Length: 186
Image (cartoon, rainbow, N blue to C red; front, side, top):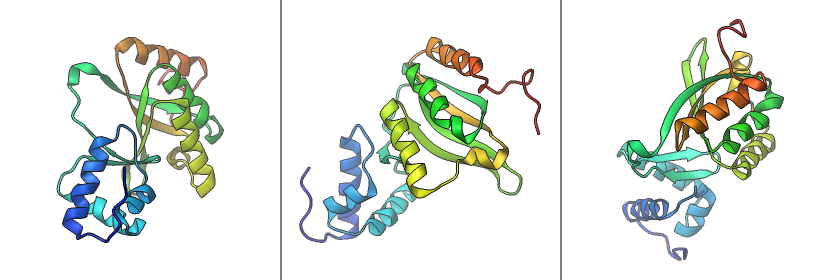
């Protein structure tokens, strides 16, 4: 996709951003959008905020911005699973899920002050998991699950129930799947 060579007005730039995101099947970084639009990354961040305020279904992921195209409900199965593990097991947990054909959409924790906190993850492949882990390390960021002693929820999605069940069995075998019978809440 060719970059725009001159600075363009905000409304026109935001229309282009939506067009670029809709045309892409994978996330586009803020830096890449900034290059294409010939503006700073901060202007793109501001544009995305304005687009979200106008109900554009744009999701900020660890890999960049993604336009959430409508999906027919019968094409995928979604579920929330509870997990508990150390920070050192995050990559193993995510790889088990994606290896079973599962997309990890987000992570949720219950904070004692802020209540429910949710962060987008959106990983479906080992490469996306590796990018996510690399970004955490590069930025020296903490995992949300560190706020709750390792206990957290994931919204996961797969093509069918069998994939979700296989992923849950694999997590259970590793002691990562959180169940009432196996672990006590802190």
